[in-house]
Amino acid sequence: DYIVTEYIRTTHSIRAREVIAKYWAGEIVYQDTDLTEDLATICFSHNESYTYLLQMETFRVCGQDEYLCIPFVATVLRLADIIDFDPKRTPSVLFSHLAVKNPVSLSEWKKHQSINAWTISPRKLLFSAQCEHPAIEATILAFCNQIDEELRNGTVILSNLSDEGMDIDVEVYKISLPPQVDRRKIQAKKDIISGKPIYRYHDTKFSLSKKQIIDLLMGTKLYGKPGVALRELLQNSIDACLLRQKLSELWGIEYTPKVKVSLYTKNNVDYLRVSDNGVGMNQHIIDNYYTNVGCSYYSSREFSELMVSFKSSFTPISRFGIGILSCFMVCDSMEVTTRRIRERFECDEALHISIEGYESLFVISDSNKKEPGTDTILTLRPVHPWDRMNEEEFMQCIKGIVPNPAVQIEIETNKGSELYSSDYFDDLDLKPLLDYSWNNIKNIRKIDIDLICEEYGFKGKGCIGILIKNGLPAEEIEILSKDVEIDGEIYTLSSNIKYKTNCITETSTSISVDEDGEIDTNTSWSERFKSKASLSIHGIEVPYNLFPDYSNRMSKAVLKIPFPFSFRLDIGVNSDLNLNSARDQIIYDEKWLTFEENLYRIICRRLKDTLSSSDWKILNEIIQKNNTDTFSRVANSFE
Image (cartoon, rainbow, N blue to C red; front, side, top):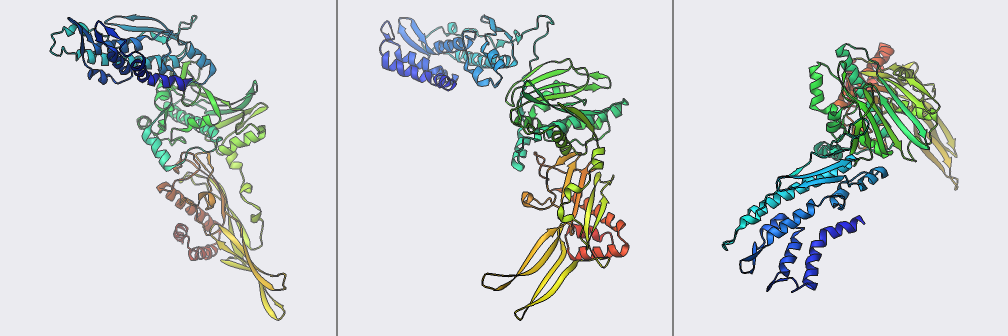
């Protein structure tokens, strides 16, 4: 129906001219003057630019001292049509601008008879409307903009009328038109009891920061896994809490940051809720950052100036300003309640925001939220990333996303709740990273090291595999070498282990007999003690393999270590890595090179402290012989 309506709207002026030419030719006559062509021209001009009217013949002589001013008739027709904006009309602009999918909102739109009164005079054009939904007010105001444009165009057309040398009083046609629509009476309906508007109107909806979005799209990929919606909400909440913590320290007031994650079911619908007691948001933040996709508050000049004014620094987790969009990978609507702390003991008014899709207008109204912070509730789709998880699995999912939380996190389900903090990361062991190939082997020594370094902002632990022969580090160890004589020929069976980048390989030579009785020699190799890592940045997991494999084969941001090394690491204060927008790829840049060198430096320092000076010297010689670029250079500096 919409497509047909739009087609008719955009083509009816052409069809009108064709119908007039076909069926009314010679029928539109005044006295002896045939005006059929003039009527067709006026009808056709209705959908054309106003400049078309400037090119029309101005006057037609219809009799003695009788004239037809064609542009005047066309202008009046255009104005009468667009100003006829009342409950009996449904302007197409309302259809095209409405992006609200909720059935209730749509029913309110259908009641757009909000236009309940109007005043039309030479000096004033006023519409009165009591709107029940901001989408209605937005579309009415947008339509008023079109009326304003038509009024301006009409004034231009009429002011440019000339008598064409026929001594006609053209001033009678230059009627006075209002400069624009008076919009003061277009407003939200008021609650009868409180007397307050039922919503706050702001032209608030998602918009794009063009340059930043293009940069993101050109250099990275956007979200591919729906589960990242939870990660993005947690990032936002942690950042808000850390910022408020920083401000509280500067203001000299006590503050305990808290984040709460809830997964619950109500009326057979699953909801995901993430709440925090952070800085919260006000209308300014919502308009300029929350809805301005690609424009992060933490990357803004406004935030930088705030930090400078407080003589403080703060490294946020969220940086791209597109995280909130990921929520619509798992939901179609969301509710946000927020209140922003402004000064030491002052807060902005609390707001409630209803969002019915990333193309939708935000429905903003007052909230009774007392404390600063933000609550976000997603109405999950029937199929979502957590629908088949039990309570324990959901809790482990949260802990996997934020293994080293900078603030205390409470996880709540239908069956209970659990609190966890950074102590959880301290207690994590390396067993999940050490597969069966890390089982004890006589000639391989496992060395456990800590990766804690305040200077680099590192926190974690690791395990290194070192080849040992006769109690000393070795480059290669022969486990078996035996000659076997078969039918007068000597075959060597052998097995040895040696270093390869990021692992130890075991190579074996064996013999086999084929169907024809021929003896074949076979050489096979396998990786032992393969390196594996778990990385988080500022407490948030980064699902990226730091060692080369098929998933990062095109990336230079990988570690190359001349022996096996498995570790768990969180990068916090004083260190950082740049990630793509999906946070699943590390950008190869100066930050990566600094991180890589710092990590190698800690590994070498711990090895040198653990091994005897002679053992370290032998191992370092092996490292230099198996040159792995950066690592060899760093190890050599520890001579």
